[in-house]
Length: 241
Image (tube, rainbow, N blue to C red; front, side, top):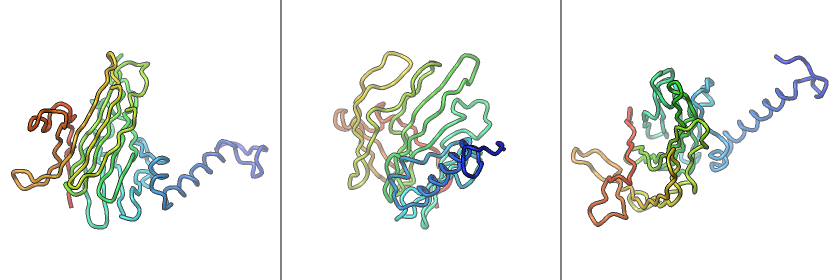
């Protein structure tokens, strides 16, 4: 605890005062009705120890909430009517993980979906070997699927954060979503321009289980289902209630 300081009326350390006031403001945003302000202001961090800082109301009117369990590497979306949990990272303390420290942010959402940005903070996972990455995940409540739609990673110690520019955005379709994006794909090699025109459609699989199938719309007709432009990365689901 800092010693009393004469620079504030209460004698409180100015830095501690700023931290306390910042927490009060953050708590007000968490409890507020403005979903978009909450998305832009609040992130869930894997090194957080306070349970109340590991959950976020995504769409207040729908009761949609997101909760992170860093100990297990689980991310849960829930409403009063459902609960769906996915493995989004390695359990905390996993020495083999190249993404031990990360932050999650909502980019956009509705009562039935969310677009989540996952930032893997730079880590030296082996002597002289570094990893830093950005992933964007689409969560769809109707199918109980969460899958990667954009990703980039760099291994240079002095590299910039390999984020997507422009920020990914989805367009709702009658039975899914459309994702159109053109930009420079960050990498440790020579940057290249990438164009994505993908759809994600709700379908019923052979075993009757609901799926969210990717189609590369730029491919010849009938040839773009789950091809290399779809990124892949469907997260394992732990619970679906």
